[in-house]
Length: 290
Image 1 (cartoon, rainbow, N blue to C red):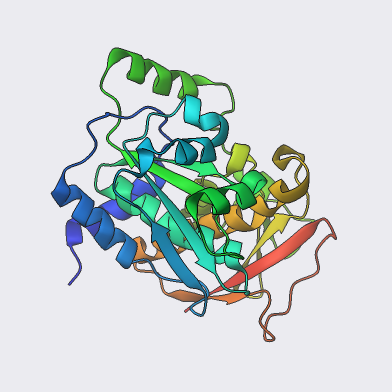
Image 2: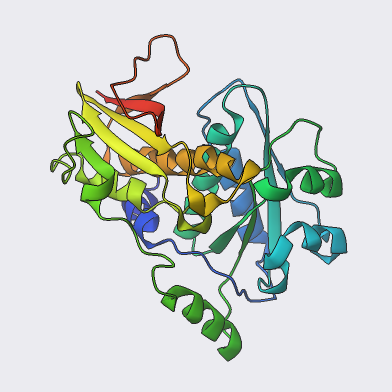
């Protein structure tokens, strides 16, 4: 049975969630940790045939190898808890992984817990080796979570990060939403506004915001840019899939919160026909409302 208070707060949690770097070192109590486990177990897949696993060993954070897995963030983030979600499977693993992990993130937000993605795609083989993850598994990011720091220094770090110009700014709606064709950028129609707002609120690596939305033939098509200079070179470009999955999760969660029905049709399905689009754009899925 759904908790009406949680359902009512779900949409606001999508909009309110912010990345937090400094945490209360005391961590969370056992009851809260049990709730986190429930959030993880309730995650819904985008690709059901893929495996989804969350590594969270007691005492894992005191392991220097794990801290090194966090890269530069290991020096500025003070995490009481870190999990390593990873996917196994051949079909769209990063898209599916981002979709699932964002559900955990919003669930944490809904229960008053802060979080931060620590991207790993640039050093994924090293992370797999250090954490003993299965060969061939995909781990797009580690997830730090806990209570926000209450110390003066911790609050100052979090405030500074949020104050960095454009560090958390969202692209205007008429730069990412199009109707009928990519020649017609505009604001979304009223009935789509809450879903587009939720999608635009999604976090992304280096705030790249790779997503583009096209409303055509009674479906919302989600695209990403094939190349984004913010991601850098090499494996970093794969963040477009992980971040695209995060964006799609926000839309799905918004639908759940608002009682909107629909389903995703993924771009690799034989039934999917991508609308005409520039070569620089890559289709991910279409949302068909019902």
